[in-house]
Image (cartoon, rainbow, N blue to C red; front, side, top):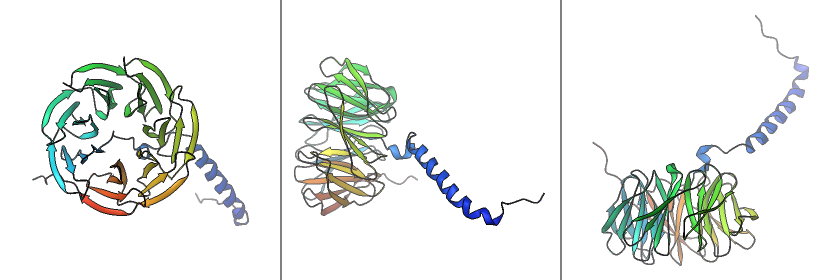
Length: 327
């Protein structure tokens, strides 16, 4: 059967109608949950500064690498568990969340010697040290584990909303961020009891505490959202980039990575003003601040870039050990 098309004299009317339909469809999509590939939930803190060295986890080769903050020189590379993700420092030792085998490894900070491997729950990805305890976010178990620093003994396992991928503390409480449910769970640091579960918006990626307020980065929408730690009341929201993935605080300003645009953004906390947008090498991901300079990994964890903490100028790029090729 021969197809019948609308008369050509009406085509000029169909074009604007089609554009209106597409526009309304776009608005509808913005109201839905963001695509999973854009959520990019933080896998803890796979990069940190312990006061004397930069540490980076590499899930591809099940190692943790130690670099000199002065020149990026390789100081050591140490085997840990499967698929290491988040790192934490207790003042002497490095703790590593091994997301692939439900364990946490304790390394001596001075020489990387393993001081113990301790079991947690499914898929530990983020770590936080408060006082004499290490808190572990178990993503696929929907829980947080509390370990004693001295011997790694489990002091309790506490359920939270959703699948936790980030941790922060206000000094008295532990905040667990779950990207999948867009929620924050507040736990008492003393007892582990739940003090409330709160909405953290769409596509939350990282949670931090700046000494006064809680901040959550919204990856898909490119916002930094400020919350009152007392009741998690939303205080402000600032658009800082197309996407806002990882977030750290250098005691003066925030730094935010936008891996999709390969930039690192410097933001003033007082009013959310973007002070700088610095081009990054590759898809900028995890960050650490050494007191002077900013260190940034790419999402593949193949190298670390050193940026001047004031100007954002690139000071160096240092490769991380890669896994040996398979036969």
